[in-house]
Length: 534
Image 1 (cartoon, rainbow, N blue to C red):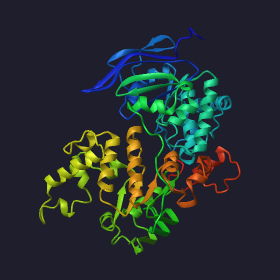
Image 2: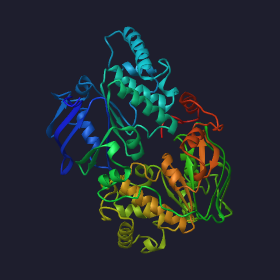
Image 3: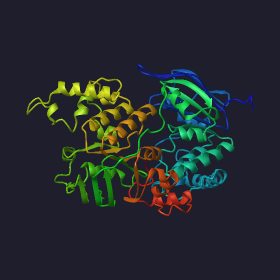
Image 4: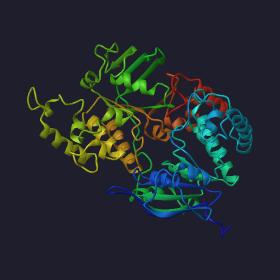
């Protein structure tokens, strides 16, 4: 074993995009039959490095060795021919094709499809038996749950005889039970001699799953350590370059009066499909109520209707006074005037105009406010820029340049711009969706601190997140949504990820054990996009 050649060895890999050095002289060895984790902040260069390995990019310098032999990986076909498969964070499946058709797509044996399908079916049965990757070959992809779709992606790679699998943020779309099943499958693949590279920002997954972990920071490889010889705190410090508080430091909540009162809230989409099916919910002053659930189960519609971007029916009260749901006064502007602030789930599509300057983005929605008005006709741009500079300093936005376009900030700093705009308006109610999606660990720590600080000022906060760790850490009370309904409420100190995961899958009898297959079946039959995307 000591003289065994690495499954993958990268030597001196460098890659620049104009003036940006994405990878700088990176060397890494991944031994066969192991699970090797790669972690790092946003922009650390992880995706670029894996894109070079999979043939999407060509390195400016450096060499790639597969099994001790130098490889010339010019494109993804060359990578596949070298035994490398990649499972992307956003699956590359054709939804109206069957599982079997997706698996052979691009790997047909000839012009006639029928023999290829027959061969693939036999191979699929063998792979399913060998690795515990059971799927229904004739099911349409659009009709199966997201956990099953991920199995299809893994089977696609194995069908192409991949010995090396790269998985990019594989649990971002899974319930806890599905994630546990995935890691059991990865363990089985490892025991059969497969080599796995796992890219994830979740330190707990790294500690529980990998044999070795490499840390990247600012395009360079800062460390490679045995997982058994490190800790989450050490890895976080290696990633960020400073000590990071991994837990949310907050005192117990002291809830006050009801700020938001929702009764029998219903929403239909443009096709007449009911997305919210009678939601009852309360949020009090000085508390954070977290909404847990797999995306597509109504959380987005809940935020939209509360924020005034979607019509609905039912009863909605803010500080005891009714809010209109009919569409006549149901708009974001009127909500903001009543003390509702909204950090949307997708900052780039709904929270920012990417080509506009930071100072323009901090004024959106509040540009009619007195401090920003020079007179009845014109805004005071100088006042907006000065205010933006102050917000950037308080929220540690980097670089602190109000004149920089939103698209030129990292994801974490884009999120800080949106948070600064909404939190600094002293709202009675903050609606916040996916507060740390795509955000690195240093910015996560800061964002969590700001949310807790707002709660401690006596504000009501409704938090939607697909990260159960985040929900458990931040929330004072947790409501779980499935198929447009609230399945139940739990106190964070009286529940765990397993129970919440079952509720997320629509299973209210959490006292009894259920299989991953039952969970996937529930998710697949949920309304809308349930079970397909997080």
